Length: 382
Ligand code: CAA
Image (cartoon, rainbow, N blue to C red; front, side, top):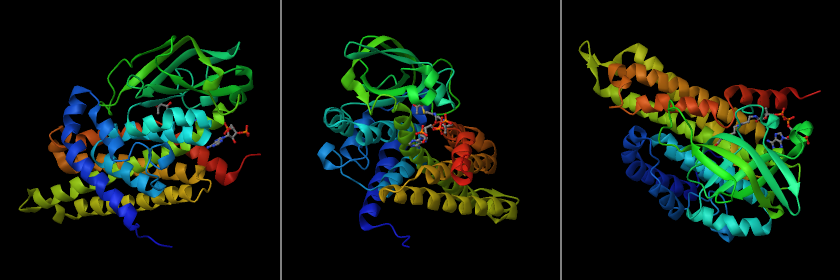
C-alpha cells in the first residue's frame, strides 16, 4: 500500500491548483453574483488537458490516470463548484461515457472536439416525474425508417444551454421500465431540440448553466444510438459511476476549502483577549473537520484508484460520494458558524460554499440514492 502521489500525479495536482487559484478563484464571486458561467475557462481547461480527463491521445486527451483526474476535480471544487460541476458533466458524464460505449465513429466524431473544448457536452436523464427513479422516465424514442424520433422533457440539465452535444435517454417501451431505455448522442442544433434556462433562482451553483430541454419530434439517425437498443439504462448508470466520483472529489475540495478558511480565521480573529483558535470549542470543531476531510480524501482516492485498475467501483464511488458530500455539508455549516456574522455575508467565500454544497448532496443521485446503491451491494438483493 502506497499513500504517496506519484511524481506525475503531483505535477497534475500542482497544475490544477495553480489554474484554480490563479484563474478560477478570482472570478468565482462575480460569476456567482451575476449568475454567469465563465465560459472562456472551457478552452483553458482543454489546453491544460483537464477536459479529456483519462481519455488517451488517440482521442485528444493526455491519458492521465483516475487519481490525477480526482485531484483536478478536488482543486477546482476547492475554489468554485460551478466550474467543477461543468467538468464532472462534460468529462465524467459525457466524454467518459462516450469512450466506454461509443462506436469508433462516434468516438472519432466527438471525443477530440470535446477534449479541446470546441464542443461542450451535457447529459439529459432527469425529468419532471423521473428524478431518483430514473427508470420511470417518460421521454420516448419511436423507431421510424432508419431513424429514431424523440419526444419528452428533461430538466436540471447542467451545461444544457451551452452544449453542442447531448446524451439523451428515452424509452422505446415504457412498460419494460429500464429495459426499454435507449441512449442517444444528439447534436443540439437538431430540429425539435429546444432549450431554455431553468426558472427560479438556485440556492447555489448560481454560475452554473441549468437548462430545461424539450424534445418535439426530434429525429436522429440510427447511428445516434449509444450502446445497443434497450441498453440505455446501463449506459446512464455507468456514466453516473464516473460523474459521481467527480462530485465526491469536488465535495472533498469544498470541505478542504472550509477547513482552510476556518484555520486561517481562527488564527487571526481575536475575542476575549485571545485568538478564537485557542478556545477548545473552536479547536474541537476544527479537529473534527480535519479528521473528516482526511477520511473523505482516502475514500475518494481509493475509488479513483480502483477505477484505474479497471475494477468495479459502483459501491466505492457511492460510498465516496455519500461520505464526502455529507461531511462537506457539515464542514460548510460549521465554517459559517465559526466566521460568525462575516460567514453570513458573501464578503467571505464560506457563504458560497454553504449554498453550493447542498447541490452536491442532491445531484447525480441524492444521499438517499447513494445509500440504496450501497445497501444493495452490501446486503444483496433477493
Ligand atoms: N453500471 C451498470 N449497470 C448498472 C449500474 C451501474 N452502476 N447500476 C445498475 N445497473 C443495471 C443493473 O445491473 C440492472 O441490470 P439488469 O436488468 O441486467 O439486472 C439495471 O441496471 C437496473 O438496475 P436497478 O434494478 O438497480 O434499477 P432501479 O430502477 O432500481 O434504479 C437506482 C436504481 C440506483 C435508484 C437508479 O435509478 C439511480 O441511480 N437513480 C438516481 C438517478 C440520478 O442519479 N439522477 C441524477 C442524474 S444527473 C442529471 O440528469 C442532471 C445533470 O446535468 C447532471
